[in-house]
Length: 369
Image 1 (cartoon, rainbow, N blue to C red):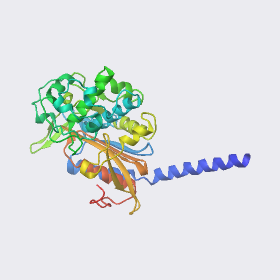
Image 2: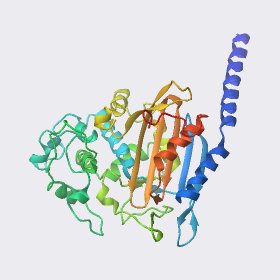
Image 3: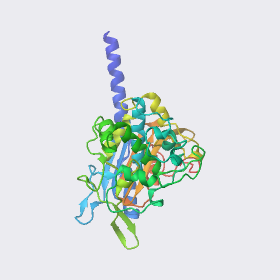
Image 4: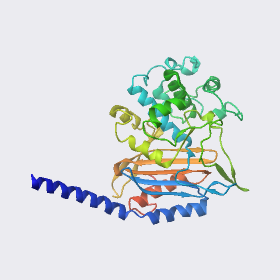
């Protein structure tokens, strides 16, 4: 009995020493130095987090949150995350599927009876989440935005003026309208606002106290301002995010996003079956898209080894975001930026390479994006 106990203790010590060694080998200075190049050359401003198995190995803030008041970004600042919102919408749909409130393959009119039949015919939540509906890419294509918050009913009225570009399920075309409709379906089945459902189903259970849905009437405290680079310098630039219902209206922090991302490795939010559907990516022709995530391959430390990357990012006026889950290495890279534009995807891949001990650019870019 004593021998078994001693053996177990030795195993625990060995595992602990390995973890400490792994952390010690992680080159934070190299990560920081690489990011500073983007600060100098690309005017990057924002927050970067790198974690392994949920443990934060690097977290740092750069640049201003507010140029007018010379306020610096901090690691606790909130940022609009743009289209990374779609991942949250997809997870919420799947949670309601687990609860028996939504069916991925039911006619969409079941949940949105006010959607015009010429649009809803042959549409399902499955096709919306996969971006295979044929709807226009953006609301801007069919309406001019006003300087005000708009309601879900108003967004539905706008969508009802659209037409499908192809037969649903036959092609892939990334469209914000898909996720507007998914959010409206969520609202209708729950008889609550999208913001209220996310609080109930995602943010409160995961203790994401610094995340929410933004509106002009509800801009959160400690949220960084958005900026855009131009020929005349850097200036304020932000969207009216109510027009991005379910597709780009969430704000968050890097810590909250890590907490959320880590929950998707367990059954804390979703059943095993729903997770499989969430991360079931399509072919490149169909955008490598699962439900709210792109699923691709990535180069691991071994030159011949391929891993699975699940990712999504966001791009909107004044903000960029990126969340990469290198699942085979349990490595997470999160970038939230309050500047547009800079090559955020390149930076994300490069930080992965540094974290895995690879040289920057040490991947076959034709096969591994």
